[in-house]
Image (cartoon, rainbow, N blue to C red; front, side, top):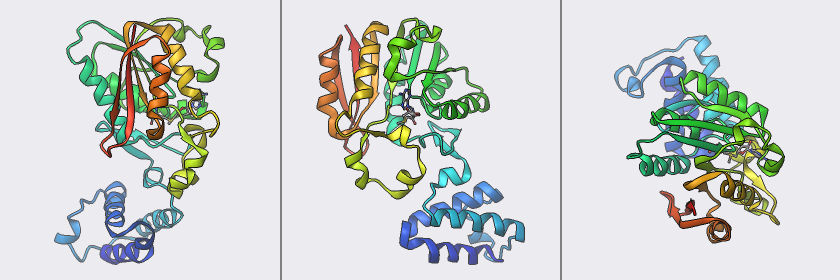
Length: 289
Ligand SMILES: C[S@@+](CC[C@H](N)C(=O)[O-])C[C@H]1O[C@@H](n2cnc3c(N)ncnc32)[C@H](O)[C@@H]1O
């Protein structure tokens, strides 16, 4: 079959769900991923034929897209901070807003010469600690998650990207019981967390591909206690950050003030709220007094 015929079928079947531009970008991503073909191939080889085996692969991807499976789950990878991470249904697909948080940290420590001990709480694919580890030569980096399946992905990413992060299992909501864990029985210079923060009431703002395919464990919090992870992380950080150590949080855009209050009521000074590239309140930094 001609590759350009397949592209037409993609548009016929998917434009109504995703729009023409997004379907174009899916199509080119898939032909690059599966067939190693660059996006301009159709301009120079309009008569390019693909074989039966390749047809099966790309039509399988098309049916998954029709079911609104995220493209990153179909190809099994996602880019974060220019690094390619494996992802699956057990981890959140890394988001560009989270890259902004990582860039904030890297910018803050660019002139720091002494070694840094860093902990990421609720690590998922490991995208935050692995990208910090790859960008900092002087850091000892840890990442925790409650999900054994997510930790498997993080450990695999650590290996594939030749990083040196120490991943371990722990529950953010019962850290008092976890202090026997040797990794938590120490002080850190930086603690980061992008914990679950979407309230059930915000579900209707979300796309089906997120609700149906990304792990609820990574996303949702009860409407009546939306900051439960933040309270636990802030309390832990107040005890486990070195003096002048920094806490960085990705936050729910609608709860910026409430999340800042948690830091103000605890042992933090110089608390800063920043917006993401979309203009939403998205991240907070606090320095431990
Ligand atoms: C919003 S995701 C963030 C994942 C990753 N850090 C990122 O930015 O892409 C939140 C993560 O917290 C983990 N998590 C949920 N409940 C937890 C708990 N009680 N203790 C530790 N981790 C938890 C989830 O498994 C998920 O990986």
